Length: 111
Length: 114
Image 1 (tube, chains in turn red, purple):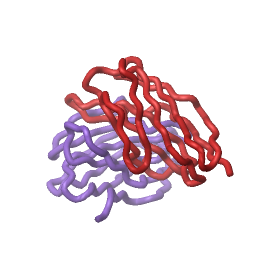
Image 2: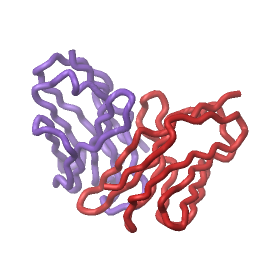
Image 3: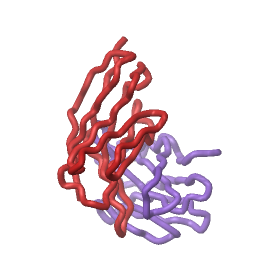
Image 4: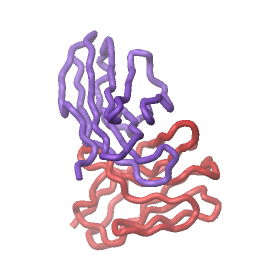
């Protein structure tokens, strides 16, 4: 199963863009990249997902490299409420549908 | 619309006891998955059920079992509890096991084993 690698922590000033990198060099062609975040050990909150193309929604943008070995989650205007642990995940959907979590990036947004 | 609901939210057990955790998926979702999250780590996959059939199992001992009911709700059972079973147990549901699409998590059941 493909694994992801993320920096353990990052800081970002409020109002600035937060760019969270993720490496998934062993990802297979039919595996999706998902991003979730978790605040204070609540349930993980879905942010965005993608396969090959860049994606954007009301929360964030996802940039996936052409070789699909890495991606970047962009929070365009970080707020204090965006302080959380962000997980970059490969979703394996073969016989089993499962998310493979890494250790995540702890994003601290400061005033 | 109600999201994924889990019960109980918190519970304390002693070593050797048994625990049952419950999950109600989002209405219309037929796939339910269970994850264990130990403090300081990312969630780990335990089970996935779809249409009452087990579709997958993570690297957990046979003390862990689960089932899905006709209404698609699910139970996770853990026998002979160990201190290391202390964790946040998360349930997630999705409309289809084939993806893609969103997979929604509940707020979890926090189990403490003394």
